[in-house]
Image 1 (cartoon, rainbow, N blue to C red):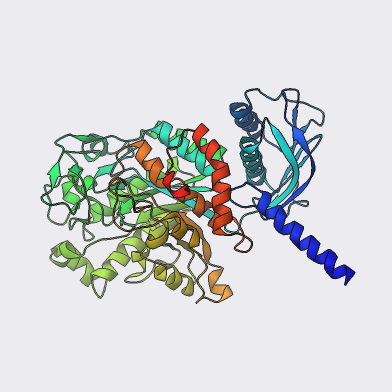
Image 2: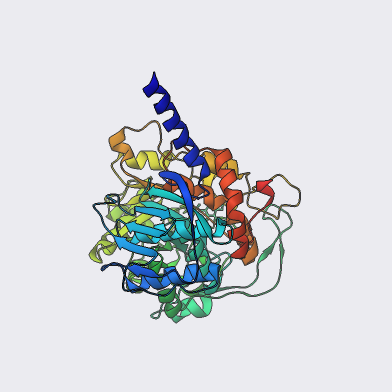
Length: 523
Ligand code: TNX
């Protein structure tokens, strides 16, 4: 009986321990102890061999931006100690953080883990009163290895400082992947030196739709819109992200969503054009011609430059929403179907994707595609991004392919997040924070072996209606924090009410970082 009482008390204190953390994502284990640590300008920072100077500098800078002073570097063990030790912390990207009255010990399994420990410390610092941190111990590591956020920069594009701010925020909440949607019908946004027409023509559209696309008649603003990232800027973003343990995966769309590219290279379309970058939103019949070998040469040349800029293992090649209308009546596409012994246009799309996959494999890269790449047969090594619900991901995993869950009903941030009439125009459905939080990515219908192909989850930010940075931030935050928690934290032991409590504790930090998050959700 006595032992039962002790066990009960222990469980209670564990539960209490969880409830006391203010962290998002919720750590695996959080225990409060007595005492507190007061951070002062006298506290030094030391690191053991193996910890990069870059990480130490970044830590100093993150602490300085909140505390107002720079912690001096120390050769001897200082109040704040950073070290790497995979025996103490066996999980990839994991860390152990101990805050006690004399200092802070942070041990990372690997540099990423150490970095996440710093992010937790910084978040706690923002929640502290006068830099007094309650003594505690955290043991933490991620549930999924892929924790992504996406941004469409074609429909509206965002300058490099905004991209960096986005990356900072993603890193703070322990995301490790930024999926950069760089090309689409409405604009091509990456400099490709071999094809200056992509910069001079495809990066611009004549004008932009005003209001929602369902509001008829369509009205346009009459203003030329566009721009692109230079290769130097892309390199800078990739480097900046890597320092923060974020991999940038570029997306070059094919065979659909290609109007902007076709406006510069009409010979790559089935009809030969002329074409114009799209000025309104939707799906367009004009796509890359799959019967024309020049299409493949062009895309391979583009990818040659893309893989030089992005060291990521994965390259996203789109594959979604490719109407087969033109291919059906295109003599070259039909000849390709006959010559390759394909059954129909779906198999032609599969041929297209497989051909690009083969090319990228010669560069040691794997492809990711939206779930339409399942139609007509999946490329042998493709990873599927499941967006039209979860079925595509489930099917891919059954076929022993890797999958990333990004289901539209749960993690699309171009949808409405409240029912207030004052909400700015949004794409379509209603995806409140609670719904994002409720999403469980491991499908019940799969065996454990099948589910092992699930890499993780991602939130998507399509920018048709996001013309300004503030509007983008409003749609992304705080919903992205719910994705962060689903991607990182164990399924057990977290609840939506407690997430909301921790979200309120995160508000001051979001305010200080000047994030235009949606407050109405937190009332
Ligand atoms: C579908 S999600 C698209 C995008 C649009 C989005 C709008 C996906 C792979 N394709 O091109 O921007 O819907 O919600």
